[in-house]
Length: 387
Ligand code: PMP
Ligand code: GLN
Image (tube, rainbow, N blue to C red):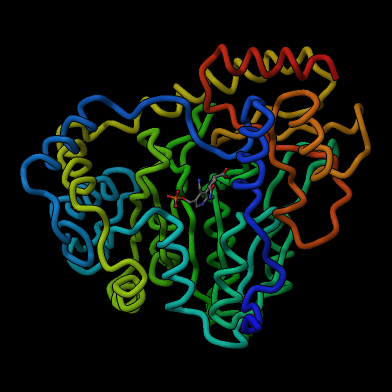
């Protein structure tokens, strides 16, 4: 008789990204579901990594990250966010943003603590909170009247923050909706958390992919918010290298100390040649991120131009490499079954939005990833036009 295992995550299945990418592969469909680019990382960067692979950079890195990489990250943070972080005590290199998010949540959340997320919420947050014994409170993002634009309504957050709130997780630029924050939003958040025991976990993996001349407002840039924040970034999106799984956590010294207690037993240290190569590249290309927004804006514009020939309704995304579309004029089928059906029958895979939401979802929305070469986007929309 096999032993009976009582699941710690009884409501969790296989992540939608794995499900949809597998289905796309099985059906030979164009995969605009899971977010990964079809472009290569810069040649100079891969050359530097190869160099370190071949020249002895193959043993454990220091637990918090290679000093050279932490130094380069600190410089970038000062340059972009105006925040001077201590290289030794406020920067930790992580195994992608996923590990950074998980370690921060385990470091902060205790059994019975409440953690606020905004729906649609990236799928790793709630299971990480559950494993820490926390209770997730979902606040829906507000939706504009035409149903196509998403933003935070701070009053709704204020209504759920109590003395039980241990952590508030924010994610701007926002996956999947592309919503962004303005400078005033940071002040509104500061007004709400002032005088509470709530920490902040800010998932900023799309920090460089923001359109139409808008700026990214990091929680690290705000003096009051910074004191209670873990800011999580990733090189995956920035270098077109989601498979490398190298990210980092910025947090004030006391928070970083607790973060590292978890990080050292979750992963211990991150791949050494990757860290050497990225550090070299950041030193020789400190402005590397500057071209990224224009690059993806051109992709967004192309994709949205093509989509005009379909029956989807949409507002061009403000950030990230995702575009939300409303398919209500084509079908009123539930999004999960429709995304699977269209993968099989139309040959284009997407991500249904309801999986990121607590409330049974009445919306008719899908997410497409436009981080693909132009021909792939054109081929995908050619198929979608038939709907
Ligand atoms: N947060 C968000 C919002 C993401 O979209 C992703 C993945 N793209 C991650 C975290 C995880 O990043 P990483 O691959 O660096 O773990
Ligand atoms: N963040 C990526 C997305 O939103 C997927 C990451 C993953 O597959 N875990 O599509």
